[in-house]
Amino acid sequence: MGIAERKEREKQRRREEILDAAEEIFFDANGEKGTMDDVAERVELSKGTLYLYYRNKNDLLYAIAEKGVGLLLEYFAGVIREGLSGRNQLSDIGDEFVRFVEDYPKHFELILRFELAGYQSPDGGDRLLMEPALAFLREVLVRGQKDGSIRDDITEDEIVIILWSQMIGLMQSILRKERYIDFYGVELKRVIKGHYRIIMKGIEPKSTE
Amino acid sequence: MGIAERKEREKQRRREEILDAAEEIFFDANGEKGTMDDVAERVELSKGTLYLYYRNKNDLLYAIAEKGVGLLLEYFAGVIREGLSGRNQLSDIGDEFVRFVEDYPKHFELILRFELAGYQSPDGGDRLLMEPALAFLREVLVRGQKDGSIRDDITEDEIVIILWSQMIGLMQSILRKERYIDFYGVELKRVIKGHYRIIMKGIEPKSTE
DNA sequence: TTAAAAAAATGACCAATAGTCAGTTTAATT
DNA sequence: AATTAAACTGACTATTGGTCATTTTTTTAA
Image (cartoon, rainbow over all chains, first blue to last red; front, side, top):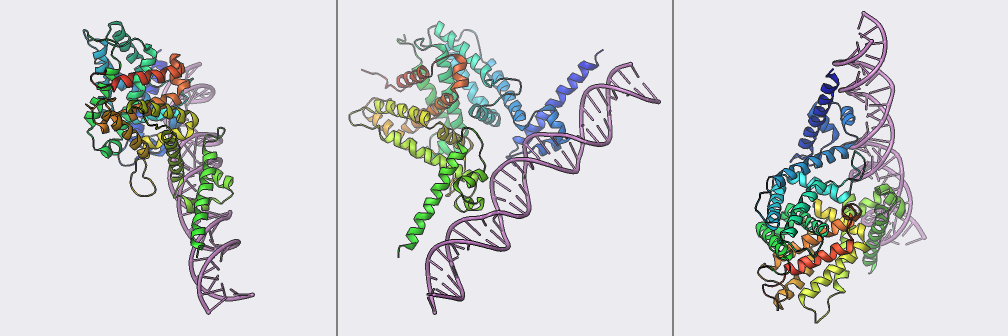
């Protein structure tokens, strides 16, 4: 009988409905801060029901953040073309990252919040929210080290963490451009370009010819 | 008469007492999350009194963060020796930054929180919490560009923001080392070293001889 | 020294909101 | 049709940030 399956689907759907409502509420430009009551009203369920689908508010936010990581991965995935050196693919990843942050600033902000605060994910351990994205970056890096377009005197795992952390830091500043960047009167695009140039030069192999 | 002055001093002292108590409470390893009632109990004042000295909880936290920035500046200031190239001074700043984060992880974390969230500082505008530290970095950079040890095809203001953002990102990862870094099984010190090597190479002038 | 005024401090109270749970409604099973 | 199970409800509790009328302490002025 397919009843169990149908119920499972319906349950999953509810979860998503709640998630969508939460996204709207928590990312609402006006309110800035949404409550669980707001979410309940938006999705036309009682507050109690929310807690049948998510352990608590943080879990709900975490789910939104996870969805954001999924979106980021889509941006990444679309960019890998054959015939490009690892180095150039890396550069493309950077572009996609910037695009993602511009398209989904609120999601990115939320992701950062969890990155910063750490969070015991609902299902078990202290997962690494960004892990899938990091794995992707790692692949490209290894490719670049293999084809000689990226230095290999620093291990790939180290470079992954380094580049990732730097990128996160830069994106953070971009989010705060009104403060950071206007403060110094520089153009956002130039800062990003500058970052690229420094990094690209920084990861060159010993002798480039 | 010196009564007004004495009162002013006493008022300042109260502020600091509250600040110290708040630091203890909010950074307490056990509790993780402190309340204003906790702070009040710790300084042996009523809660209402706290609000005579700080507009709200956020202001109190902000004051702690500001204190943290002051500490960071002390670390920086101690490091400027004559006879070093801007490039080398920059490297020293990096070392001090790492030391600071290791010595005052909680303060740094709090600073990051405000960097990320943005905050209308008590006295007026949307100040840049880290501005003093940035100004310091900028000086060193300009020195390096002048003495030819740092590339000048990217403006100093741009490099300031770039390096600063990258550094922040890296420090963030360091704070989360149990997750990020253990995850990939790399050594923290090596990651930092790697970061230096990449950046130092990245900011080299066109031709180094 | 003392009465009036000012400053500092108090803590009971309010409001907002995350989270709970006994009870109700709806759906599935027999 | 009766029983069981699943989904849902919303009034309620607990926590905590913030307020304010009142009290205590200090200063000022006569």
